[in-house]
Every structure is written in C-alpha cells, then in structure tokens.
Length: 236
Length: 216
Image (cartoon, rainbow over all chains, first blue to last red; front, side, top):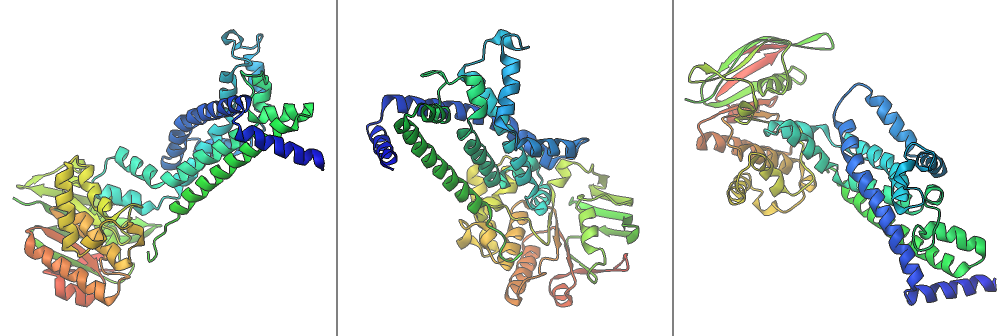
C-alpha cells in the first residue's frame, strides 16, 4: 500500500514542479491528438453532413461502414498502417514509420468514423421544418445545407469532442506505428504503459492523473454542448 | 403591376388518394383570401403547391406580372413566402431568426437591424428579441413566424393555419396582425384556417376546399 501512496506523492511532485519530461510528453500528446482531430473534423464533418442531408446511391452502406468503424480496434489500425508504412510496404518510401506523422495518421483513422457518424446523426435529428422554413424564406440549396449544419452545431461539436476523447486515450495503434521513442514519439498513454512495465510508477501516475483531468474536461465540455443542443420547443 | 397567382386544374394524390381535384383559381386582387375546409381537406397541400414547395401531379401553378408568366425560380421564390403551421424556428435568438431571410439576401447589417426591429415591434415581440426562439410560447412562435415572413415584404404571403394550437388571446393578436397587414400593404395574403370566426374577421375573399374541390 505504501508504494502506491509514495507513487501518488511523487506524481503530484512532478505535476506541481512542471517536470520537463512530463510537459514534453503532454505537449506531444496534445499535438498528435489535436492534429488527428483536425484532419478527422475537416474530412468527417462534410462527409457526415452530406450523408445526413443528401440521398445518394450506397448511402446506407456508407453509414453501416462508418458505424462499424466507430469501434475499430486500435491495434488492428496500427497493424495495417505498419504494413503500409514499413520499408517493404507500398508507402515505405515516405519514411513515416516511427514518426509523429504516422501517429497522427493512425489517430485520424480512428477519429474519422466517430466524427462522420455522429455528425450524420446530428444532422438527421434537425427538425425537418427548419429545412422547409429556410426554403420558404428564399434560401438556396447551399444556404439550406449550411442552415441545417448550423442547427446541428452542438451535436457536431459533441462529435468532435467525443473523437478527441477516444484518440487521447488510445494506445494500441500509436505504439505500433510510433514506436514510443523518448522525446520524439513518446506520448502519455504509451509512457504509462512503458513506465508501468519498468516499475516507475511516479511518472506513469502523474500522466494518469493528467489524462484523467483531460478526460474530465472533455466530458464536461461534451455534457455542456449536449445540454445546449437539447433546448426543445416547449409548445410545438 | 403586382404579382398574380393563377392555379389551374391542380390534382394531387397521396398514397393513391386524390387530395386535390382539379383546383383552379385566380388570385389577382390584393387582399386577404381565406382558404377554409375541415382538417385533412388538403388546405396545407394546396398552399405548399402554390408556394412552390411541392409539385402538383397534374395542373399548373403560374405567377404573372404585367400579364407575363414568370419562371418558377429562386427570384420568384424570394418574392413569396409561406409561414408553416410549425414555423421551423432556428435554435438561436428571435432577432437572428427574423434576420435570416434578409441575411441570405445579402442585406447590410444596419438595414437588417432596422427592418427586424420594425417587424418585431409590429408583432409585439421587440422585448424578446434577444431570447432564444425555442423558449417562446406557441403563440409567440407563431407571431415570430409571421414577423420572419413579413420582414421580407413578400408580394404574396401564405399563412398556413396561423391560429392553430394557439390560445384565444394570441389568436386575437395574430388576427389583428393580419388585419393590420392588409391595411399597411397592398399585397395578397392567402391564409388557410378551419376557424369560421377568423375567416369572417380577417378575410376579404373566402374559398372552401371540400373533398378536394375548391369553391369560391
């Protein structure tokens, strides 16, 4: 029991003293996950909105794939990406394996279906009268689409936040394609795994606390947006 | 010369049932046309077809100006407006809801502010301009819907059941707004209702839609 308390004490010491190694790891984690999220949002929001607003051939298949991929096992993504990026793989010439870029790609693949599928769901939930009202007020097709997306904004933000939560906590794929190189590709989750293996619980514990705080913050933001999005007609 | 609407031999089927049967009429005089009929008689369908939101299965909807037929395009859509029974309020402030139509037309901010405030004052909602539209009462939402339409100064305004699901007090307010609208503007208002007293108070011309047939 004592070693747990000691680990906690040391962890708080590292956090309070803004330990350099700790900060480097946190910054890299945020950079990688932030980059992945940006890519997922740029691609996922338009695709999700398109699937939610337009009827096209194969729409159901696209939605089924997106929903299935929301639960993609990270290690499987890591494995496939490893095969693609390894020297003998089709993209080996890019020399991306064991770089933060490879980690961003891996996390983007994991975040994209979450953003796209939840954006689709948010757009579908928008009251059909909103669309019709925009039309009666003289909106063009593009303006109607943008209006619906704006109405779904809280759901879309919640989708992005949920994807951020998923990639921040992810370890399997980035460990495979990032390699956990100290000061270069070592992020919070991979450090926790490594340091626990080594028996260095202080750093692992400190990162665990930070990760939990980030998770709390994400959930708080998510809850706030979900709450804002559920203002409903009181009478109609 | 003002915009006129002529519908001829409109037919519409839903699930094999003929909802509208050869409906023809010419809306060529300014004033309030009240379209009456029991629930499910096809009033909303006819209004949607007239407002170019739906296509009839057969028949024609034509808009004329100076005896020339106009094309059913965005330009024409922006000269007419329909207020739906469920107005489709946007999840934002009352002000932004009403400003929407002006904003998408690229109007300047100062002019938008002036026109929106005037419209809000007209329907008695100026004091609620910064409130989220989804928190308004049903009567207030209906009034906001009317303000959102009249701020665009449409040449033909369609009102689909403007007093449905509204309390007596708000019904009176809405009817007053419609009557005032007639006094202020020389345009055509086509309103559907199943309320005889509303029709008597507000209407200049009364049309009946019964069993899919339109009778003046």
